[in-house]
Length: 446
Image (tube, rainbow, N blue to C red; front, side):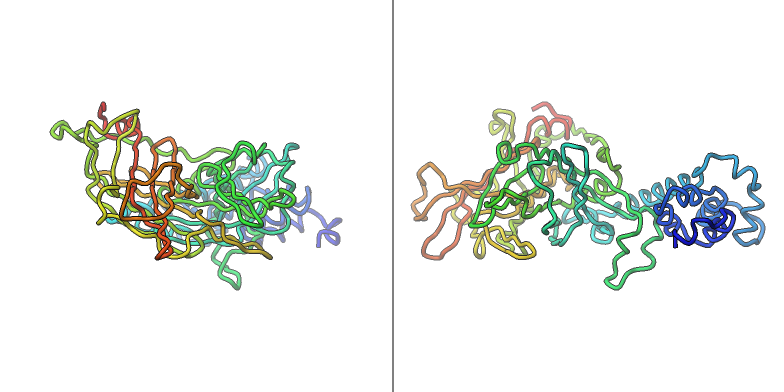
């Protein structure tokens, strides 16, 4: 134990440390300052480094210890600053892990335009980091996760939330093993021990100052109020006490693995710039051939799942900086679709659970005419009672609007509540694509 080893000579401790693996060395270095400096020993770490990343060309047969002695002398290794080979080993592990992820995501599913092996690549978890105004961090581990065909929903809840009034920011981060081989020894439930070293990749940062005043409240029930923070974050606050009940992140599969693994704890992963493919033959390049897949769901319930092909926009539909793609026409009854089941957002905590009516998650995957992802998002949405009178004589009931907007486009949905069948019908679904995004994507000048 650290107490009994307090007076133990450093030479003996180094000998003991030399039998540890990389993960154990990193953990033992967190015990105290003395252990930290000893666990940075270059000779020990160079032995680990050279055994995991051996030279590409070796013409002799030796064990790892003998090879280490041949490659570098003891004096040469110790000439480096303390911890040099530990840092080299960690950085090489991170670089190798990133290369492996990039290779894994190269095969593309032609029907979705998304990586074919997304689920195989999801060997990670997500955390939220709550920062208070004094700079203190509160790291909250994910409690549950739900998988859909094109998105992931991650849940955080519990009783140890810090006071909302003291918080200034929330960071959403992907968390991956720091070392590639640290998950070879699983725990009973198949996951890696929580004490193993992990690294963060910042996905998004949200301002929590005056949350209830500057964020959009999308719904409430008897216990909680739901606030939406772009992009794709939902915060549930208790009505009594105004404390955090839960946090939910809705994450679309598109470039999720890259954003969750290839960034750093402070810097988001920067997506590579899109190179437009110019087409001088097609006079309306970028206006047709779109394919939309849309899911509306909550808590394992799917309310609507549909694929719409050959969407287009005529030039005279380009107005106010947007291209209009009509998916479901108000005038075409044969296109109108029902929402299945009791529509609402299902939430739960350790003690309570509830259902906020007219709220749910919406996944949008829009592919261009080359079947590449053009606009993808997953976000909480809500239906609002419409203020305008209905012009549809085939439906008798209340009319609702659903609107979503970000920097790349807008989604507008009109629904009618049918009292007889107790269900909502989508009677109008329109996408509005940013003309600036279309021009940048296709190299056009609409």
